Image 1 (cartoon, one colour):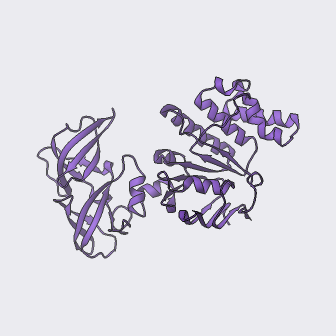
Image 2 (cartoon, helix red, strand yellow):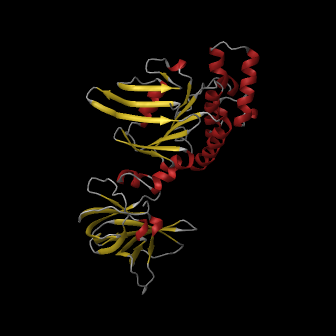
Image 3 (spheres, one colour):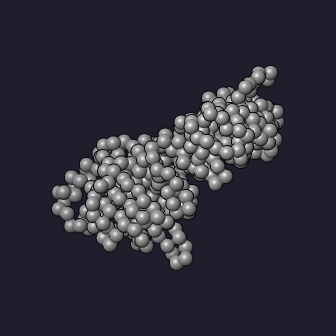
Length: 369
């Protein structure tokens, strides 16, 4: 049995289904990230694990114990919220030790526990400061320290970095990764930021519409998405999607035509027999390039107008509008093209993925053969 088992869990508010038939296994010591758009149910699922939300159907077990009716304080979990939720009149020491003091732990035990946590989170010089004297990153470390000092079985993080600026978010991501490595405690983290999810997670759980779309390592979801939603959500910039038609299916290839209106090409086939018909072609920006003028290609080529070039220093993102109105992004080198230029874009055929009209992956075509 896994350390945390979520089995056929559902949550409804009257006629509204927030979560439907959610099942997930989390191993001891894993760093699991729930990610998805706003309203997908990820925070609700986290709060159900913590006991702050009731379960309409299904079961949640922690270390073999069903906790559906167990009070939050008795579940052995600690939660860090999006807001720091620090007591403004208390010092860092008092905020971190609050839970232990409410549990009437001995004074020596409290002092030793807070000292240990302060060393882990580099709060030693801040123990006498109040929240108004701390930066955003320092406040978040105090909130995390308040959770760590209880030595829980599971840490729960509900978008804890949302209130920080970009530089602090990067810094805190590194600190959370290091914290997990040192403590080895099971952690569940909620975010809508897929870059944050990919950099933190051992296991990444993509949710949408109250359901789990796919769970796996970040690279598994990036390279081998089950459906068009996961393919488009994981990765920055997102995957390009081009409408196309399967013209013919051979023993070792699929020929596609009408790609974004006029393009055509040949894709490798891994033993899947598909009938001709409409599909969506998925290609990541790094697997496309702007063809130099006069260069020929036997690959998949489409033509369009450069609408925008985002210069990022070491690379650029070229936004191209194709003849049928489809917009794509090409990851390119510095000064790869100029706005309003007409360009031809070549795709690496073996990296392309196919999705059917329902958005499900056509297995066997593309990089995961």
